[in-house]
Length: 376
Image 1: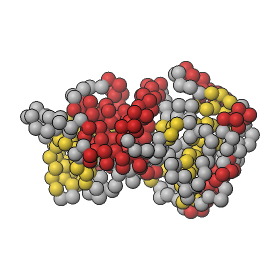
Image 2 (image 1 turned 180 degrees about the vertical axis):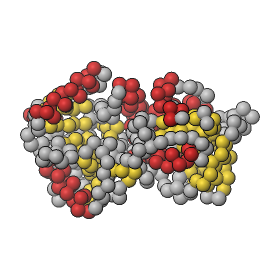
Image 3 (image 1 turned 45 degrees about the horizontal axis):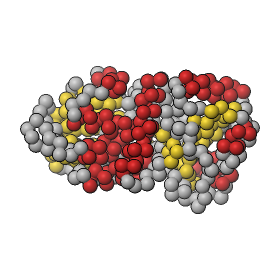
């Protein structure tokens, strides 16, 4: 049991049961902290459910953020093993290709940067791409790159499993419960939720897009960008779509159109999006979902005959400068912030670092670039 200065069990209230809040709750409960988890919905059903859930350090810039992400990527195997449930964690890497000379130059430049950072990245031609992933019908290929360390996970299942594991360690979970008030002082903190006042030694704000409003209740400024996104699903498919790789980024079928990215969930359904993961999209109609599926099926023939299931547009956490917000705020000493766009990749690392800072009083140097004080 983890105890505070008075000798009583240390109490932490975590607001948010998405992948980040759920992972922190699990890590704290493992340390014997009296954890209360509050979510206005259910675990992993907001931004987490709409995440493409590509575990990677491939798309992270600058180098400090790349290494930060890479450290968390390396923690995922141990993190998932500790949950003792198959949360759909699969490796296999990510493949991306282009049909233009301009695109080839861009991919080669990206590969050179990843090589400089020591991140495995193979440059392939069309024949090598087909050998690596025979399930693809890539069309013309000028250059392809393969980042072999990347993986995927079922994020909602991972969040649900973290919450279940936290409960086994004594956590109390309050779902479908709205937070209406927060107070913080040098000695204590409290949350008003569902008409009840809950006292705590520390409050963790892991509410995703709601973190800006929640933080404002205690005088903390955490600005975010609007980041709407659309990722469609298919009906569950009985056969694997891909033979080897986990994630595919395919070029536009015609100039001026966004690229396609796709992966398969452990239940057999495919997730399909367009543009980069940071692209803004609001079209969640059935017609758009059908069109997106048809474009993806040009590259992955096994998708032909599948049915598109549109998912309502979701707003994803996105700090104003694009980088994580992690740590205590000088304006509210008992409030710990945990906000990031790359929640799926970073959940194992953030949960471990947050637990060390909250329970052990550590001040983790690698988090200094991501402190909430940079917005004050």
